Length: 215
Image (cartoon, rainbow, N blue to C red; front, side, top):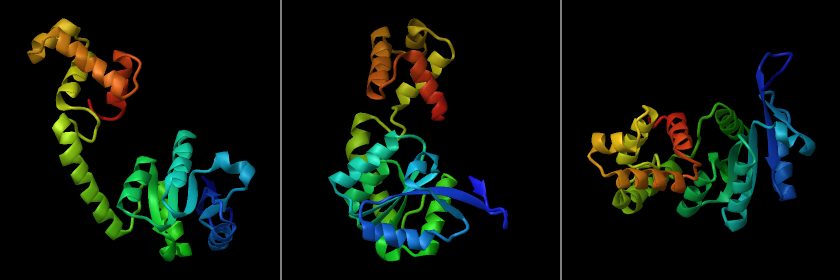
């Protein structure tokens, strides 16, 4: 983040990832002269703290583009979309989007608010979309995760218990005795965790659980 020398205001580096030239022109006109932001040229995109993506609708192409951005690093994404339904909303959240703005509501002030919030690590979603997202989350928990004994952490309670004991230095036999499991069950739990979360080994699983605040 850079500072405006005259005002001392922190300026957020922003890259506009927009294919439609009309939308690009509109967003640029809205944001170019805002003192809170610094619009980056295409060859400076890697310096962005926030990327603003504009699409007509959240279709497969849009989702693939958002996933590429997510894989590209730690840059936060704000999505401007003309249309977004419940499935599209869940899809963009899964792609790491932290701010959603309807194109019809995309005033300069609203865009700056969403961009600055994203730079602070905060999410912004229109109130009615947030309510629909929470409904979707509740349905996912009830219909998909609960039957599998999972929570939104991605870890079941017994998986957290096993990882906590691994972190404490317990071996497989000690964990089995502590939790009244068989040693095979402990090994299966650790295998399931590392496989499902694409972790390399027990140590990587413990590091993941610590980093994410699960233990």
